[in-house]
Length: 129
Image (tube, rainbow, N blue to C red):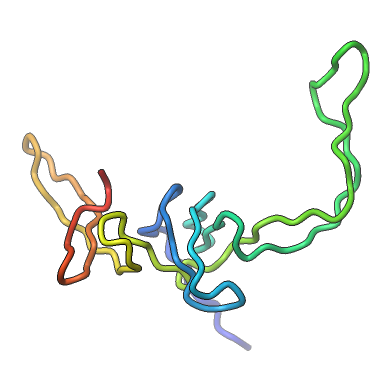
């Protein structure tokens, strides 16, 4: 029996980050993270890892205009599928290159504050601005 892999409950990639895909059909492409799922260890990247889904026409809830019910059209729809976090790498907003993420702890007003930083030797800038 295959062993079940433990998924991380915390990821260093967040919603709104720009990431580059490391492997698969979209390797080398960059996109913005639409959704981060730390419990599953996955992220959804805008317009990348697109799959086709067949959808039925469905009525839109609470969209009664002049007594008519609006219907969401059906058909074949393209939508981004989740990717494992290990298959993407954050793109540093300062040096514009894919980088690993470090954590810098600073004390501000007596409380420790964690900041993500670029781990490139020639950059080292703060990712969270």
